[in-house]
Image 1 (cartoon, one colour):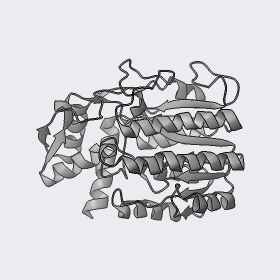
Image 2 (cartoon, rainbow, N blue to C red):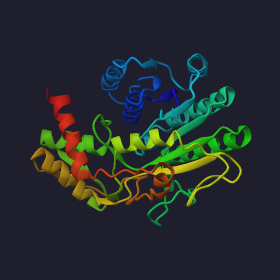
Image 3 (cartoon, rainbow, N blue to C red):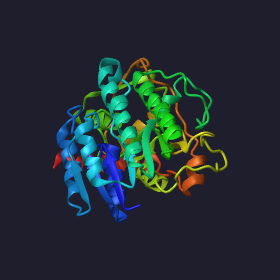
Image 4 (cartoon, one colour):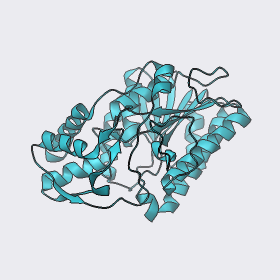
Length: 332
């Protein structure tokens, strides 16, 4: 693996994944449109760090622009593609569903089509734990049905998995879709809970806590997630399944959970932020938000079988790392 194209490279997860690849001596082309969904200055700051590396270049194009995107792909000729670009956010998908169609469906179709045209060795693409929807049998395993999404965001991500499977079957492009579980850490997005809670606590403003705090999540530290993605690039789906595999019987296609494999109470997570800041939050307890779920937990057995690795960083270590970054980035 020497040439990797990363869509969404200026995003939270894309930045960390591209950084890991560059540390391993890989040549990386980042593709990002630096959208204004949140402050583009944060994306520019991430991109500036990546651009200091001699093996990194960025193409400022949208993946839904097939002409511009396809030209960059054809020129770079990647061996592996890691597709992370997407319109994210469960709650935003209720207010602005059309942006999810453009980025998550049309953009992902373009990725699939270009991978077909250029006979990509391995296409890896981001999905989400939100596809488990109304499922309650935890830990979630990759072989569970995912036909009950509770948000349009989850529906678009589930659709991209199905689109990917059809392309893997028809054109034999090896594909791995990974389902992320509540990723957090330095350089996180401003719309994410950890960012909003930290900002609110520092400002002495109330923080909104949904379902009256009765929420549990499988919090996954972003460095662990990026390490998992990079290792999965070498786990190319073929014909032979491993134990507990989600490998399709008719296509070189599998889905893999990337999560810590343990639940943390939301109130305990907030407690870690309070300890890291040395300041108590003003808590505004609210009912469950539409489209949200009360609990998640990943089985990461398949990830560990395929890569020999699984996330291990607990919130007691990951939250202070985020707070240190936030204070340095926003208070200096």
